[in-house]
Length: 127
Length: 168
Image 1 (cartoon, rainbow over the protein chains, first blue to last red):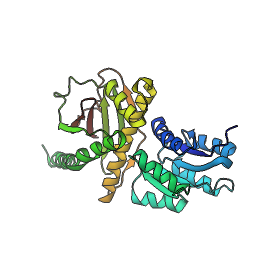
Image 2: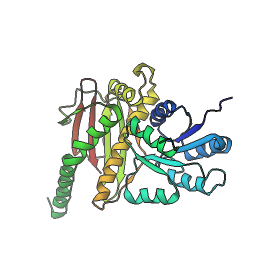
Image 3: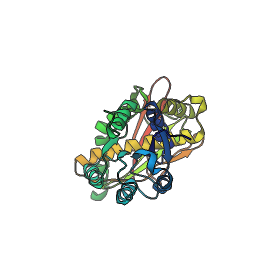
Image 4: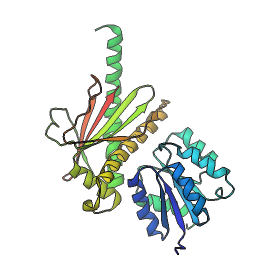
């Protein structure tokens, strides 16, 4: 059985999830991938206890990232999992909305793998 | 030409100038550099000067706000493989068609995000629609009678990306 701590990447772009995977594996975490908010909720039901961080895109088909964030923060089982937005959404008003809804960090695309690794480490308390 | 059409033309010209001054000169170069490490050269282009370049994959996105803007990033399969391989660190030979299509769409999405953020500083609010991709040998993008108001070529030895902006 795999007891490695996990990070959940929620992004409709498979390329972004692959980029995230590279950075996460360097940090010795395993990556769970969801291409939509709905898929992320299914994963959370089974895996929430082992997930240390959720990386969340904003603009996705179906439920958007902010909607998913609000659901996560209302759920007693998931609300303590830190969430970081990884998104192209750079409008100040929307960043404020995400912070008010409970994100602990925010990374704008485009990003380098070094920037991603550093922010992930900040979120999981390794720096 | 009546006054209304003259005003429309003036608006488009001003918007084109705005794009050429900042958005296309900085945004796309910066995005490609950050995501791939490649420093691209930029050239002004026309449909005539790019007619021999293959556009096999186009990542397309629309911004809706004060203006309706469509942006396309067209490239050959060869360019898409080099870009996506550099973005992901994967061997270009291992990439699937889905990877290339997704990579082109995501690049367009990131470009739109940059432009939206830049507009918002000036108090202009835009929504970004989800990106999509058109594939096929030597395809062209025509939106009714609107032709691209800006065309730029971004290139290195290994890639050539044709960026077009349409005001719809």
